Length: 430
Image (cartoon, rainbow, N blue to C red):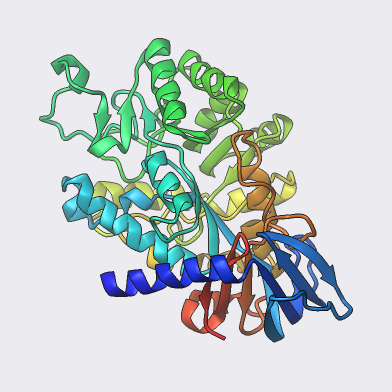
């Protein structure tokens, strides 16, 4: 595995040095927005899409010329709810962070080879992981990390076992599970937790805004945290020019969150019409996940309590999708795979195609998701998510017809012919 990693790293570095200019000819372009394909050619220089034309583009001296052979060219995919640091088997959740990091590295590799050029960490992954990817030390997608998940005591992010005392009461650090979560109660602790994440390099903040499926002790209906604590998190994030995303299911929780400044609701399955209208009024977004909330979506190691909670929230999936459409609420593409489930990320495309057209699903995974990423002013990577002149060259060359049968994206080996991240070819199966 190490030998394979070194070869891929060498390939990426070599490409970066010798292929600063790339011409991709004869492709059908999905631009990330429009539900149609346009035949054309694309010139990439210094990581930026320099020219898109339906006419022949003269290859600059020294350019690498790629024959697209009528394949579909799409913007790189984006997953808005990734947990790289939580991909270890559930039986190893108390293992050393070094082991968890190894699993995270494997997950990052799988994502990028599957055409995902950008991830938004939905809590748990330290921003240092994003910095290591950016430096080229780790092979993976661009990562917008949220840092430690902020949770109240007894909240969805309080992962202590019943016999484990509160860490701060013992004079210990409030961080849990190797820094994946942090317990914060009250305005002062919330401000400190958020600011600590931002200091570490977080680009947005994740809080737990209500009961959860995978936790044992907090019922789904619980409200977390208090309005003043939510406002504190929002204030600290806003002071840095970014936003808060919140885990929540119920209308009561979502109402409290958006009325106190949260801009991104994650999951949202038990929302009602009145609350959906409120979400639209406050110009917030909802990102939900279909594979994990569909029949057979049970995660490894789930207890009977967890399974009952999953059944409860999953009943609201179809209604949630109806309300997202009714009020035209912005939604992106997200998976929330944990404990090694990332190998099923491609199935999310297929699951969504039951409710949206393949073009709409691809738009969620590209331009929609990128719009949500840009809600943070801490984005230092430029504009991506569309095939547009002047934008970052995150591109995927696809075998087959994804606008007809998007399920082909379940198989990264046959569907993904080429992956380009910021102008560098990181995968080439042509």
